[in-house]
Length: 150
Image 1 (cartoon, rainbow, N blue to C red):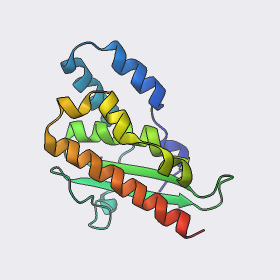
Image 2: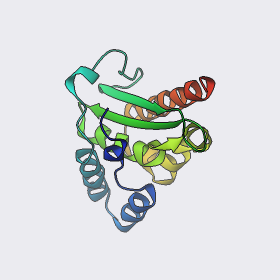
Image 3: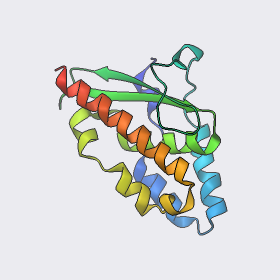
Image 4: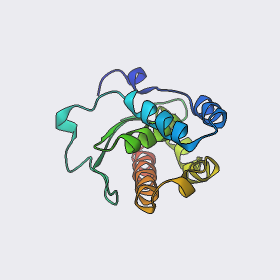
């Protein structure tokens, strides 16, 4: 992976504020898609079975880099991609919550509650909601593994 600062996108607080300003769900979907377009491209070699997230209707790849010596323990950096625009946006939201954070902070964060607070569960298909949960599970699994290796 390249410089870890490249994985920093829109902060989650800014995403939530912008989301609240949009009254119509069509506008919110467009905003989510725009967030996905801001993701750093994932190199072709990272579209591998090892990086593929199981349980998603769309194809999703998450690449994790662990920086073991963070001040608060291992810090995880993520890159990801999907073949679906809306899912790329969901990945961007997850990265705003989790990327460049210590593993312990990742394990303490509740992305599912945030997902529900944003109203996404009611406005996405069950397959997309399940895929979101699968991505969260994968990120949390990587964080647990990082904690176990320090």
